[in-house]
Image 1 (cartoon, rainbow, N blue to C red):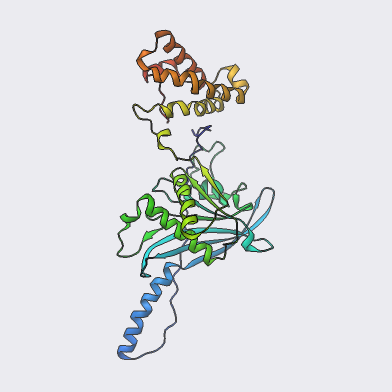
Image 2 (cartoon, rainbow, N blue to C red):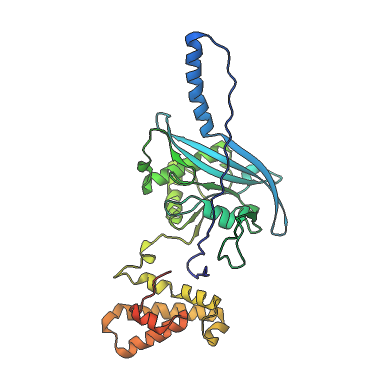
Length: 347
């Protein structure tokens, strides 16, 4: 069952829904002999390039925040070229623009991606902020037999246009023919490609005057932080803000490794929130959620942190107290905490 964590956002479980990119044949002139053959060869190259950026545009209407919301959906590719103008990658994206009166260039726009780092943008797309979401049961614990998309009444499209980007090797984004994709699977190169996408999209769709935001989840928060500096220093593009969802900026906080006690300390309030949600706390802690969260955080940062630092120097009485208190804040059995040497791994 999905738990409402205090310091970590709920992991969204979704199925990939794709846009079908249709192929269209160009007009051809009648030619003779070698001229006709050469023209066909040249035209074939033109077709391949045009297909790499062919777009599918549809129009929709839903209800969000209690009112009608009309929008357009654009699915397709942006081709990123190298210095000699040869294709390097084809980045797939899905963009949503709210239909509204006024100057389009003044409306906020947000570029969105998940983490992984090998993850497409599908999780935030259909699990959180897009205009459509995957239908789940009341507690979000399982998908129905037939997965359906429903209107997302909480979509962020109500207050900002959204552009969901798939990094190279995820979703439908791929390296160009003959280009080794491995070169893009590194922090700096990844940021450069995302930066080039943002620059190219902003220029092509005339959004330089729009307030611009970057939304990143998990490793995507690391990408977002790096990307903000990159577009500023490289393109003189000033972002208006970053939105970091379940950020992974300090990997020491999420690595439950021997000798690294930081995540065990930081996650105690999350366990308390999950236990409260599932009514596993004592009646006293269950009664006042905010107070219980405050107490769990304060205890974890002081008494629990000190106890883990002491390690085997803990007295029997101190160890017993830690086990009992941690059991109270998490709803876990004391034997479970004892057997795991006072440390609870994230599920």
